[in-house]
Length: 122
Image (cartoon, rainbow, N blue to C red; front, side):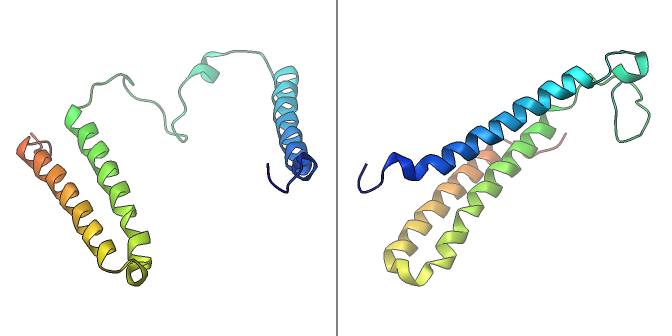
């Protein structure tokens, strides 16, 4: 383990144990002291103070979820470009070539999505 001994990590282990103990103790106390009376009002779904209307199991179009997932996917991939932009000068020409390859792969995926009409809303 190098020059470090296990004693140097003792404060981290103690902090972990205290945090875990606090969580367990808090859950136990709220379970013991909390009310147990179940009513119809308590079992209702709560939507930010707005009365619930209709069935929560109403089906949504799969296109909605597909567009949302694709947005998150491409949004996260774009986030990987920020470290490259910050270190642009240090990476040199190879960093530029690697980013062109990365963007090309993204564009291939985007072209595939467009070809499959995944973004067409019916």
